[in-house]
Length: 111
Image: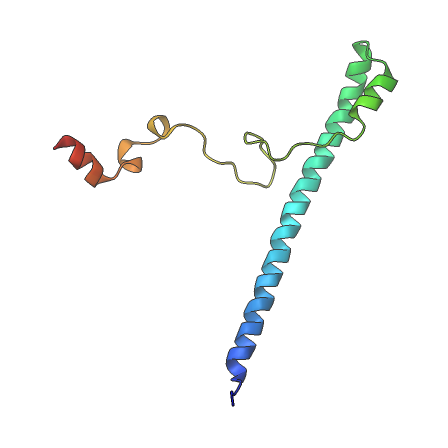
């Protein structure tokens, strides 16, 4: 017959609830960031409309062609407010060699 230890059961439940709440918080941040980016994109399209019309694009053509457009938030060089920007550049040009090469590897090359 197995016995349930209340402390470990409560600890697991608290851990699971904490993990679920953390996941919900992260999802909320991502959704908020994405919807803010989408709102910015929609604003950009609205600002671009008068310029397109002034350049000779009929309003109906512009409206028909931008209807349903969504920003591609997966583009690698896209900077989205609220998201961290990955460091760009080849290691040889952005770091000192000792930052990306192990000392042992350098010693073996020099030997």
